[in-house]
Image (tube, rainbow, N blue to C red; front, top):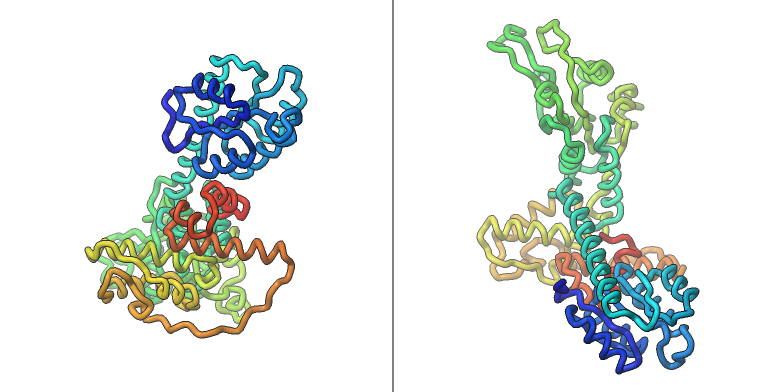
Length: 453
């Protein structure tokens, strides 16, 4: 088996002659060596090994396994996915089992048969590579469902997981959020994750005059009204077998609310001027920036329709409340628009990123997108500056009320630092680790602990 260059074997053994024997017997693998806890941790940080062979009896006290367990704990803390093979004495089964409980992959008793050791190492590599491939495929599957969604905010990631769980069902979903927060993008992701065979059809209820909206939704028969020269199916029929998104449903006129309610209850439509009931199989997604409960109180929206639509309610946070997403989205839009405008490689200046982070974004993602498109066209140099963006210069703001619980403060500071740096480095973990002053395995471990994907 040929070992990947980026995933070497680490041999931790304090006996130099035995260390050489192990390295020689495992010469088919690219390997590095260490003889104590400090050097093992250093080599682990430097080379990020996939597999480790480790003697539990390490200096300064070779007769005790304390240092060995300390080394095992530190290595697995740096990378829990690493496969550690522990080498123990013949009568040391209790410590070997303790090492397995701590997370070691396997154990072998000394003297070790070279062929058995080589086979164990090879199997550890295969398992490591299979697990890495599985993680890659899972990430690819998630990114396929929400291919247009760029986020590292925990709230938005929670919404994505919620939508993935809801997608296989036929539940009606109501998306609530300010204009420009990406409701249609999430609705498209919901449709894609549902694996429905029909089309995704979206209609803006506020953009079509009330006199035309009924025929647009339900269709009409030939001769139903002046100008109806042929039978035309509506948006609901067009989405049969797929998903219908009713955007700005808070602006739906009251007469149409009653007709939509009947459709949601009976799942049949009658075209304007028609008498035939047509069965429809469609997933309905409503979306609005308005407070529907207030509209119910004022008599502008039917309460029974609200509860039909609100089987699953998703509250989408505004961009200003998404941790690190403004800079991350700006980087994504910059790359896209630079490619479209044939501007080559453009980047954001530090001042531009600081202004993006500080701005409140009342127009949300749509405002950011338009601003970046304009900045790509207007920028003179290879960098988009704060002035190119047209965002206000930074002023000192009132300090927010702080929590003095050290664990809360530390976790919040770590999360903000990691998310901000990942956004600035466009998700490059190696560069992010360098900026944060930690090793790449430490950053991966930190991201897992803080649930940053």
